[in-house]
Image 1 (spheres, rainbow, N blue to C red):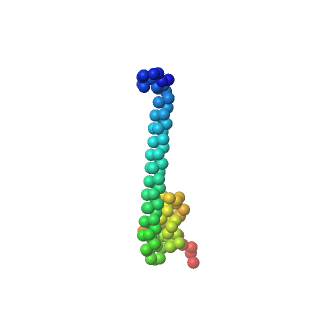
Image 2 (spheres, rainbow, N blue to C red; image 1 turned 90 degrees about the vertical axis):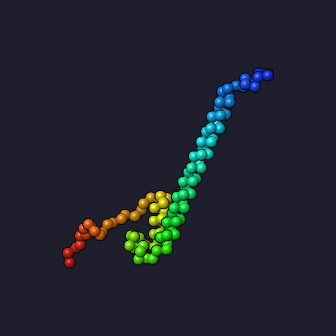
Image 3 (cartoon, one colour; image 1 turned 120 degrees about the horizontal axis):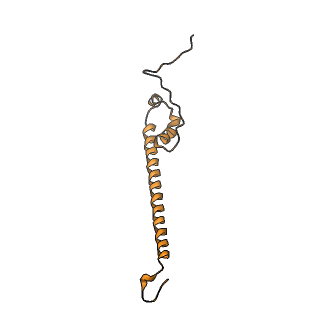
Length: 102
């Protein structure tokens, strides 16, 4: 409610609601900016990982446990952009490998 001559007589609930809306909009914008920034960092991490792995030779990639055709998915997994899809097996020091008798 506005009365003549007194600008502070504006209805308080109306101004309060506008303030709440503004605060909510600012919080939403901040959340969007955070998510966008996080996705950008994730994409950059995946791209950098992809480039490093792409430069390796096939033997080194096999030593790491995957083939050249898997580089994109490995980079996405490492960067957190994809769920882990590979099952790693360990054969080496301390691991026991059973063989069928010949």
